[in-house]
Image (cartoon, rainbow, N blue to C red):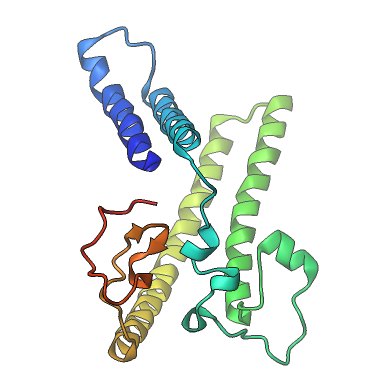
Length: 212
């Protein structure tokens, strides 16, 4: 599998970037630059070996149970039955689909607005400083804005995430009590098929790992 070759190259270069400066004082790359080299090397190795070893197109739809291969138990019913369809701009800009409840939309839009606020602040502050650089005092005041926001929002999000995690954990164990599990479904791929899709008389130990 090409992905198993791409990972050692990338991780090996990353480790080299950590230890090289201790033995080579004039090492030309800093940590961030070495990180970029490691990521690029891993991606290029994966792509090159994939192209070199590919013999036929792989049916990802079958592996991931999509399209014609979808499983009935994986189909999620729409939460918007009987309600107006989601506006096109919300689908494109915010990624909403028919599975989003009003609460989901509010949370997603809130995170999007939060990110866009700081991005807009970055653009405006950058332009202002190109025209007239801010004094140190103004930078300090802007830094306090982030601190005050964190002090206000951190307790709220902690309570919110804790409640959500406990609620979902309860749902998780409830599902485990009633869900039927195929012991062969261990993540391996054998002969272009998931292990649990093999004939019933084929033992789960057959094959040699996640080969596709």
